[in-house]
Image (cartoon, rainbow, N blue to C red):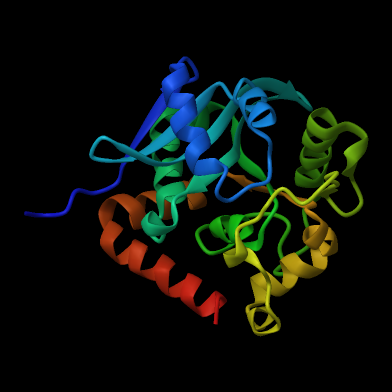
Length: 250
């Protein structure tokens, strides 16, 4: 019998207590949040991407969709948070495939407003979702962050994190290290990868749990990359993602 693929479903945040318990059972294995704090954070996201294998929940991503005007232009922000995938189901580009689904869902916004996907990258792997997938993302070792992007990131950081956001570095200070997944530790050999090296230097407090605010404009170039890789030739894209992760973890 052919193995079932991991399915991605976008859902509004109106699911049952039973589902929340299933989410917690996965999340607590990789993060140090208390159950109470985890449940409180769920309410901060208005959508979730659920990753299921058959009837089994194997991971999820919290999503917060915000529309507003900034510097006279309409914006749509898509925040990725509370992302977790059980160890045995990683390497399937689930986060990137979630991005494709979001681009389809909000395609009109992409045509008529500025759309950005962003996260508070607590680990280098969260940063690599942007760096190893998209052409344009910030911050990056490839080029300085443009002024209008820097202003947008500062606005997001100050609105979302207040005094815990450091605008000069673009980092978010955390009271403790919430990540307990040993696979995200940056060993010296990993620093040979230019993106990981950049992350480690841009966010030197990552070992204490600090995050790096990371943002990507969903412009024609980035949307085309997502569609080409994960709709036209998804098998090849997933293999490339797996290869990139293996090289980064040597």
